[in-house]
Image 1 (spheres, rainbow, N blue to C red):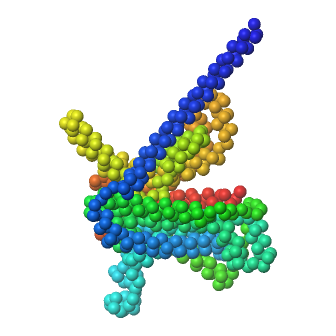
Image 2 (image 1 turned 120 degrees about the vertical axis):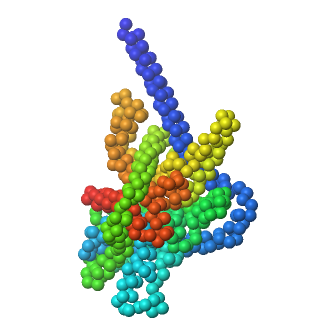
Image 3 (image 1 turned 90 degrees about the vertical axis):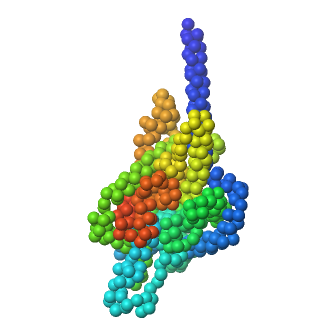
Amino acid sequence: MSIPLVGTTMAVLTILSQTTQQVRQTLFHSWTIGVLLIALLIATPILFIVASVFAETGEIWQHLATTVLPEYLKNSFTLMIGVGIGVTIIGVGTAWLVTMCRFPGSNILEWALLLPLAAPAYLLAYTYTHLLDFFGPIQTTLRSVFGWASVNDYWFPEIRNIWGAIAMLILVLYPYVYLLVRVAFLEQATATLEASRCLGCNPWRSFVTVALPLARPAIASGVALVLMETLGDFGTVQYFGVTTFTTGIYRTWFGMGERLAAAQLAAVLMIFVAVLIVLERLSRSKARYYQAGSSCQSAPKHQLSGIRSLGAMIACALPIALGFVVPASYLVYLTVANAQHTLDESFWDLAQHSLTLAGISAVLASAIALFLAYGQRQGKSWLLNLGVRISAMGYAIPGTVIAVGVLIPVTRLDKAVDSWMQTTFNVSPGLLLSGTVTALIFAYLVRFLAVSFNAVESSLQKIKPSLDEASRSLGHSVGSTLLHVHTPLMRGGILTAVMLVFVDVMKELPATLIMRPFNFDTLAVQVYQYASDERLIEAAAPALTIILVGIIPVIFLSFKIAQSRNF
């Protein structure tokens, strides 16, 4: 009697095992299909931009190529070279000083150097223009003190040019290099640096011959990020009258009404970005940067004194003062002094629009990122990994390009639906997606999905695979495991993803400016419009709000870095 019972039990277990395997394969295939559909949807705007290269635009492209394209190329190269040199000097220099040297205030300066990340470059451009203009407070004070009557009596530098744009971009983008290089310096093995000192190298020579070469990958990555941000900048170069690809795309689309030519300009800009990514990879080639020994022990700090200590303090404090303290303080003064004009009803409406867009986009981006990252964890196929990587490539593409890439297919879809409705039902629904919040949020997802995905993926990778197996053995499905096991453990990573996307959407200008619905402005768009009309007082409160929101991830990031050093 026991033998048939055992045989029946084994048969049942075999059937259950096969069923479970089939269910897992079905879920895996379903997840793969879902990931690929998301990848296709996210990649659609980029594919339309690439396809526009082969379209015929007649004489428009020839006109652009012979008139403005050389100027776009020249200004873009100048911006990239100037900003790249500036952020490398400031980012690497300050990172070395606060990491490897001890001087008064170094503990405060090491996190304060991240504060300029909170301020977009276009806000600095508006603020410094107002401060340094002929009728601004600085020149007005100089004329009253020295008795000067006009510009014929004195010389004052002009900020509204390409060099002013380079300065503004350097002040807000150097933290990208500073952050990555500082982490690289912190991770460098103490034994390597001590060996160089024992061989007779002073701190400067150790920096040049040992620390700097070891930090080369971090420097290359940081500079590549900065150059991509520089190519995508719109507000600063537009306000300073510097014609680049981003301003050219906007003018071609809205000024000339040539959408196809604007798409081709966007394709050229994408080529620039792709070249930067490839160069960053090739710069490292097959080189490897290993550390000899453990990096857990803190590297010995060189004590500075006298003039060197003062010089280090000034070198680290000056970027903070110029990139954050001065513009933020001036905006606070303008906001408080003119509260009845700045904090009116329109300000709260704009704040509501910005917060709504940022909140919805952040939640959607984090949810999609969680779906992609967990799907990648469940299935290790090359097809699924390819779909995930395609979905997360939008952040390297400027907002102007994303906006053009979204508007082209959305407009065609609206026209196709309208034509079908008229033919079938004799009803014209009009534009269903173009110029709507839905299309704008979709552009945000294409642009910032990579930000949320990186945060979620890094958090998910810290969870041991054994937890998945334990959960499945207790009868939990894939979705139940994600909901009840992984999500609580990933709470910090998911919160980080939501916060980063929220802040990025609040600061995003070009995509919002191009795609926003009629009579639906945001804080960033209102700041741009007020500043274009030379009305910085009205722009002060929206600009200050953007900066205050941007401080949140900076403080969070500083806390995480300080926390990691305590372990």
